[in-house]
Length: 499
Image (cartoon, rainbow, N blue to C red; front, side):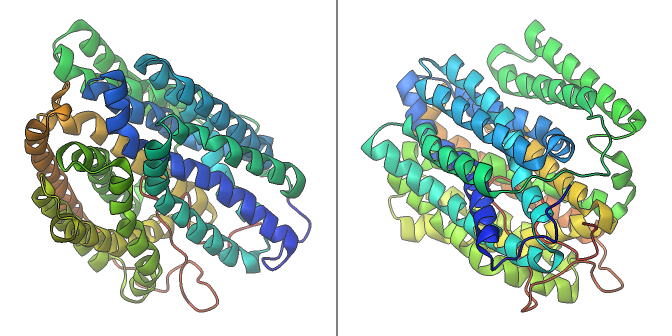
């Protein structure tokens, strides 16, 4: 079920649809970035160990990653606008509970619930654009969505720092209330409903449940192992349950007629290698961006507002250079950029080891952030387009969703395991001297992971022999965007994709 004829980008109706999807995805993007800035404040407020802060982040990412593909399937089956709106309501209500949380346990549970809303909301924004606009206008609509969503990602750390400075960390969750109300009002009145008439009448609930248990078990073992011992009954039980669920998940996906994660996509070497690079690189990014705001505030004594502002160049460089990187990859193929880009990202992370204890942002922090951002700009566009290009045109949407899923799983596991590998556990993050040593170790680990990603890409990625199978805008530029936590659920559209 699609709007008759499709919407035009220049029309008022089209602009309303773009506004709803931008505000919806922007709400999730802001939440993803403001929480990182607020972690030291939350830790001090509750006198919480680092494991608690890890769960504040991973609790949300766990349910979001586990249910992300299921959320897209529900939208195709029951209506993309309907599921999108349900996700918005769920996200807002759980955000209110996060803001009211009286203790760390309540906050973590609320974040887990919030991730379910994110999983319903996140796939819907791009799917609505794909379904609502005419083929000739989809590229322009996606381009507008990409750029404006990027601005939301950029505003997140600064907004979070400001709210913490003038009010409380609780307001980083309350800010979702007015945003959610605006999204709902516009969506109900202005966004057309659409479904996928080719989808089956069943969703892969068993696969989603197995995936959830797998991620929860492994994440629990990685976070709680350093605190309670990897030989403890609870840790071993969680790990065993997670591994068993992972095996069940693979078996279910192989046997399911309409799997949540189509394993046959990985028969393509290009697709498999691209997702291997995604897993390694986004794991490094997730771990680094979890620890960096803590380092800036605890060790360098930045305020939350200063820490948020210090990360603005990251998104600014991405917005400025990503489209150009995409055009270059279209001309020369993705192999060079996917091989060199992660190495540059790793160099930026290695440079962050110089930032510990420094009050000179311009001399010690900014150069590292700029190199880091430049490496991301080189890497992200070719990586995302290669993931789509490695799959048949009619499966480009699910290929991009799988790539998003892999990125979030990588980030989830890195946040769980990196602090322990770096020797940052318990309440040591509250002590600048101890944390700075662990932070430097963590950045070296993350830099090494990025270098490994570059090696994997250099060996495994192949440049396509013929023309690339995706569209560009009227000026020949590709529309590419990456939020700080994961790639989009698709960033360019082929006019050959069926309506």
